[in-house]
Image (tube, rainbow, N blue to C red):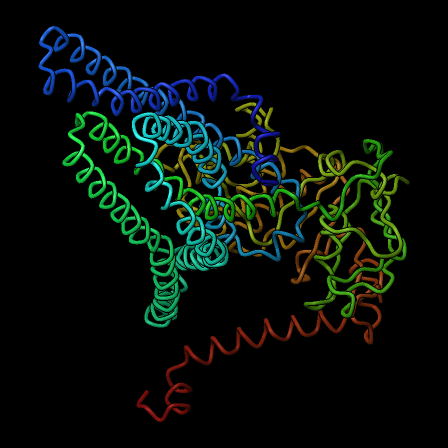
Length: 600
């Protein structure tokens, strides 16, 4: 009831008129159904027993009118409830998406996206079914059943006692089934969401699947999930349908007892059969709403499980929010200062141990270091995807923990090492950087990102639709589109996390030249693994094990042969030279023959 009350409190006011109209239609359906049973007494007694020919037309017209009203009323209530249900599904889908967008990056990194999407798609219909089922049960079936029971009692009170015998055992059976359905339904939703999520991930990574011949391995894994889902769905069917034979047996016994009693009484007392026929008609018509009411609690339990799982997501609170007196960020110069920043994704595994440095306004600061040193973590903290555990990050002297996240992120343009494109056209993906950007600004950004040429070669140019995550474009092309998206944002702070790592040498040179133009007058923070990309940086910050171990320019850091940066530079230079020598040796027929023993 708590779930139903919550849904009604959140949505009931918006649908009052629709539910009242549907309720009136259901009442009309219930009344005409009861009338059909009631009129059977006059049909039998007046027309067939007393042979009143003057009543044939009147009774026939009244029966036709009842069926006419019931037909239109049933159609109207079905259409009204369908519209309300569809609107409610759309409303909750929008509400869930908006809520997911408010939740932090920590939530999304802890959830598998495919499984989350599958779980939402399975559960969102539960809210709709909950209200429509409740309305049909309370207004439709209950009223119909009460009306038919009234007909039965008025026609023959003694026979009605037999009909009431079905109640207690049916209630007992329903309560037992309800408890089992609650647990099984939740398990079924979870298993099905895992299955749909695994299928989605497999299709998204089809290139890797093919490359590593994982088809059979994944097929076995999916087959196991399918079998598990099938078994649980069959179990739900067995449990939920167990009510059918129970209700049929009880109803059959009651009808048989009524026929036996009525038959003997009619035979020995010579009473007109109209009342008995009317009673049996009411009893048979009452069976359907009684059966539906018996099953409604089982159906409601499944819908309640779906609704609970939806509210479990909606009730999640973002772990990081704006403070009560948060103000918009006011960027005048763009200086970024990390002051004794400490952070860890896990309390037992700290990543940063008091990082301090300054990214000067209007200059380029590069952050280098080995994998796992905490470079990308710094950009995540600057964007406030996570909050620092100690220290502070300041932009123009303003602590970013005390400004609104929206205003902070509006002042930052970000290019990640893994470019992501969304559904829509290439132009749409660039315009995501700034929704108000004109067509000319979009094309100018693409030109600066060295993307305009290949975009115009596409079938529809900037209107060309990209595949899932831009799969129809190469990695370098996707990266250039993401760089154009950052350029069109026109923000004073630019974050580049290995922004040119996916580009070939020629494209990288063109993008570097373009970025050199874009960087002018902006504060640029570059995360780099390849030191060749940060040679011209105004400052290079070297991270090691979550600490700043060196700062300076490329030349000043190389001047210390024992420094960390100099070691990185030697390693990368030797790797590059070694790779060139390996290629030369592989291409030399004589050396290849000596190495393999094959003739040159």
